[in-house]
Length: 121
Image (tube, rainbow, N blue to C red):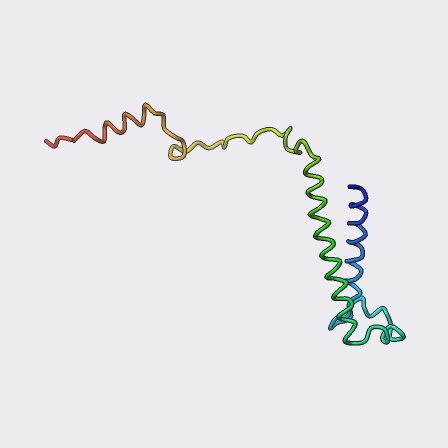
C-alpha cells in the first residue's frame, strides 16, 4: 500500500509540474510550445485558463492529501527516531556567574545577610 502511494505521489508531482509549466501566462512560458494550430481551437481564451486552473487545483489537492496520508502512515510504522542514537548536547563552555544557579546554602546565607539591619557608626 505504501509503495503504491509513493508511486502515485511521484506521478502527481510530475503531472503538477508539467501542468504548471504548460499554462499560458502573460509572458512566453512553456505553454507557447503548443503552437498556434489546432491547440488554439481546443483551448480558447476563456476555456484554456479554466481547464488548466481546474487541473492544477485538482492535482494540488491530490498532492496535499497524499502527502498527509504518507506522513501519517510512515509515522505509525516508525518505532524509533533518527536522533535516538545521537549524543546529548554538551553544556556551554563559558560559565557566567549570573547564569549559573546558586546553591541552597548560598541562597540562605544571602537572605540572612539581607534581613539583618546594618548599624551605622
